Length: 427
Image (cartoon, rainbow, N blue to C red):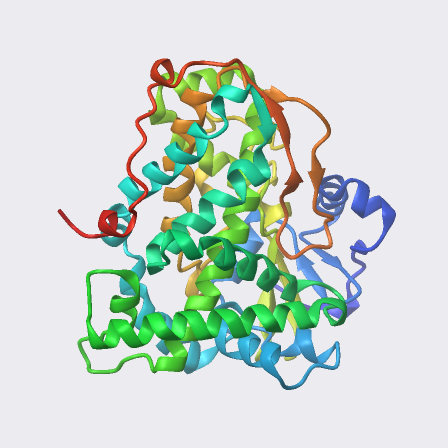
């Protein structure tokens, strides 16, 4: 096969700031994908097909972007810069990325995450109990925002009395991905400072008195004797706070909105929780809260007859790949029975596959049956407000919904005590 340099190709142009894109991004991706597996943007190139995104996700010559995002905004030092370059695994590459990921992976195994299921159910049940009998609510503040931050807080041992402050820090930390970041930089850096101080204390206590919890696993040495330093654990806990909260919040919003449009499927999930894992996968396929990843060619890269020179920026679009009709027939339909829904590429791949993927899926899967049982007849009750497609993580900022009012007993909800720390210990 002959190889052509990417700059010599006649590719469709996609501009993320263009009104056409902002109004219908999936339509823009579809039309571009019909022309070529690649498109050109104002910052680099974007892979659009499922085969291409999956293959390039596994190409080790495509590396993280490092500090490029901040440097392009004139930020080369300071609190935000330190967090970005030390906390975000997604922008790291090479031996440093490999070492940090290797030392952290044992804290996110299915065996470890499965121990958290009772705590997830307890949190979801208690939150739902607070609004189910109202017959309607904005499900973002009532559930989608609160549930993942409480799960994250329980995982790392934040007491109930301090969750509100923790939630505000987490929300402000998410502003680090604003463009431009300068108007919110002070808020972001205050959140980073607050979180660093707080979780630093948790790390110190875990080193002094290890328990069977996530922080203790992160500070423990691996078999070879290597271990994360104090600062490395702190930075990665900050990364967990952001990734575990905002992306799950966004995915929950899309999931609930989709079911609000398909009442028959909502009832099916209430009647048969076995449908839940595939429903979660289908939501991640059709509406990924994180719509792609940005990589840079560290060396020359060739794929499907196209050559990328070192330094080329390549966006791997999960949003476009997940609606590739050659892999997902009728891709614009939300179908909880789709047999290959789990083949989506939302969680990345290769050495950058999402470290918390199983944790995120489990959080969604534990919440959904409780919501479906408690909120029969779920439907829209007003206009949802969605984050603009320029956001790093998408989702609803407001999701007013209504439902038929059951009694808590008929809904079958059993609310566990709020003492979540004990739920994290093995029985």
